[in-house]
Image 1 (cartoon, rainbow, N blue to C red):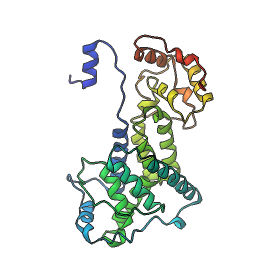
Image 2 (cartoon, rainbow, N blue to C red):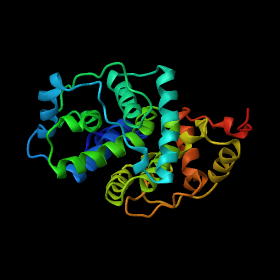
Image 3 (cartoon, rainbow, N blue to C red):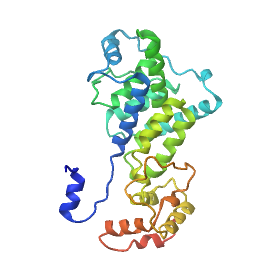
Image 4 (cartoon, one colour):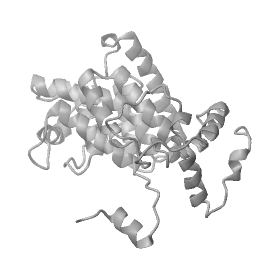
Length: 297
């Protein structure tokens, strides 16, 4: 029977490993599923609509972008648009962008949400299926200049849904994906936001994809949230108390994807004594005595 690399390594070491799933990969999978739900699957490595934008880009008038129309939004969506613009501006001002396309999706999202247009737009780059981030940047660029492109009604409707998801939900979580301490809270926040802001079809697909990858809500990894500076000291104290609770799952690595998760459930409810064992293992067998300190210190 063929086993995965992680299983083989565990067996060779004769001890369990802590599985830290790549957060960016998880969100790339979510984006892929949303894109295919809105635009349909591609029969080849390239996407025809993206090729169309790439070919036409030299004659696109970049001084005439078409941002999202606020009057078309509900009051809840409009409030979220303002909130997202504030978040995007803070991300941009921090200047910490590991790759140029991380910064680009922030700038494009701000432009589409009406927060100001960049002095220039990057020419569309590689767009083959292996470059999942291209789906985000291409979708927003296409919507910004859709009046200068030839598209069917179906294509326009689909790419509009993708761009809405990308700009109103995605960049916040993508740009914080590299911070494992934020993962647990952000996973719950992502599902909450996508269900509140996006249409039912997109929300269902995105939630289903995310539920397959809730590694950081597992009894093994939920403890990383102790180091999340967005979580109150009171919540952290509750998490420490939760670590005294007996383990209740057969699979400590991630919650079962088919098991409904109460999005209002406190993070402490995901904790168990198993987490204390994981922390002890990570500390080389030493007790995590720092948990005895006040979370405010």
